Length: 256
Image (cartoon, rainbow, N blue to C red; front, side):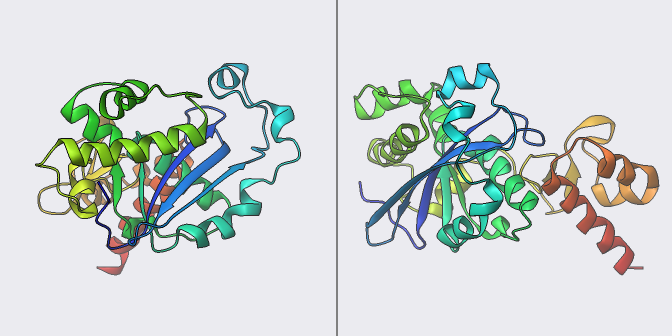
């Protein structure tokens, strides 16, 4: 099924040094950019993470320190990458929980102001889990009747994810061929920050989603516990999470 798009939709996948959004870095990014007219563009790029790639990560994606030693850093490609995905919605497999928060963090570290909050995010894994409960390789076999060769390479995973979404639209008539619907369907929570440390409640207000203040309004917590903001800023939290807490705190100052 041809995707019904208002904006270009970028399917992407990251290979990284690990799964810690704050400490780990991207070593490869691959994307397929699908335009509303059906035209497709693809690109795969290795990235020098500026840190050793742990053996356990290499065992998964096959990328070594030697492979990336002469590659550009993310900061060196950030502006061109931002230009390539400007105005696009984003899609991936487990992307809402990992790839998008990691990508946002890398852009912030590189000093590139890319407002991802205006984009729609389609997480093909979430659609799959809500419908069938499987992994990417199993999803590819289930929906496309193909064996996923070269699994855990960014390019293979990216193309598989793209094909799976099209097959999901063919299989489930209740899924609308519309990115707004797919983004809403593939989201478990309405996140304030990409890591989901805060979510919006039914009234559209920011609520803390972890720790001792879970379920409480972030604005009230910041007002009643002045030390909480400092703890967040000095803690091991993603830059995007700190940015959103800062916006809420500044909003409180401006309302006085």
